[in-house]
Amino acid sequence: MSAITKGRCPSVRSIALFLSAVFAGPFSAAAVILLSGGLTNTPSSHGLMLSFTTTSPNFYTLQTSPDLRHWTNCQSGTPGNGTLETVTITNAISGSQGFYRLLIQKPTSLALPPNLAFAILGYSCGGIQEKVSAGFNPTNGYLTGVVNLSTACSGSGRGAHATTHTASAVVTWDLAGNVISATPLTNGVVVSPTTPADGLGDVIFNAGAVAFLVVPVPTTPTGVTAVQSGDQFQISWKPSVANPATVTSSTVTATPVNSTASILTTTVIGSATTGVISSLQPQTTYQITVVSTTIGGSSPASIPISVTTVPATIPPSAPTGVSANWANPNADPGPNTLVAIWLAANPGNSPVDQYLVTITASDTAGTLTQTISGTTLIAYFNVDSNPSWSVTVRAHNAAGWGPVSAAIALGGL
Image (spheres, rainbow, N blue to C red):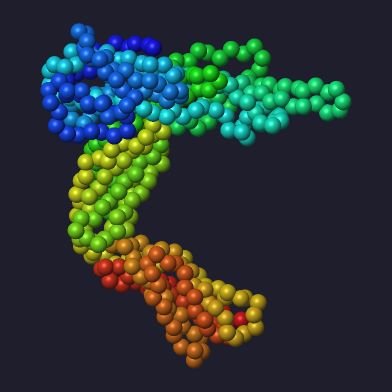
């Protein structure tokens, strides 16, 4: 058993401890509520002693909150190794109300992908074994380590012995555990020492032959704003983690209020703090939220902001890139399928809901039209391929019909 004494958590009168869910409800003064059989507590003259059994390679962090929404760490985190951990909170039963929880994270292992491992080692006899030791480079802050590779190849012929092939590489990872670079090491090269933490809550610990990366779960994004441009919201927000580089993606959701319009969502990859929501319906109020994600987990949704779109006043532009071809260009003149294709029109300030495609024959075959969904950019006509055909397209939204595209001609067969 190892013991950790911490007094940085604010004093509390009511304490909630849990592993997988937040318990919200009335607590009596000086009450201790355990929501997991794996947690025990012992009051003492020095405060409250909280104990929990750890499991490798999980990472355990005790946190406190005054309101079950904003959490801060009481200790720097403990890699699981099968031992019983004890955390002492001084003056835990006096002062203002508050809550505790035990956060358990599954770390990401740092390794070389099999293709890179083979490229460096040059052999793979029944698999390549990796032994990794890593930390944060104190010079540039990257995750850096040494990966030792080995594989055992059986010999051929009577009395042949197995041969073990080995190689090593210096590897750099990003804060999602992806390899940035891998350089073979020559014998005798010493890699500079690395640190187990970067001072921003990101931790690397080495257990046996594996290095593990732990990144904090983001807190609630703040400062969300949305500005309408055409049929889109340009959305921005403020980073919700101490180290923005740990964010692997952010998901923006626009939910219509008192409307049958569709819920709109977009996911921004990486640590960007801006995104675009498209296909907004006119005169509709949307509630917009942002959720940020690291390899440690996803943040709570930001506090919703409400934005109402303007009435539709701008029709779509004329479609561009209109072209046409015969589905069977090697057929003799006669029945065939004319295929019309175009690029999406600029939607104005409401989504394109339909396209009107018109084809006109150079002889007495006349004019044919089709109305196509606003998300479809292709139309088919079963016609006689003997005459030439002229093709035009125009787009429609809630403000009305836009201009007709330039006509293109498709010659007869």
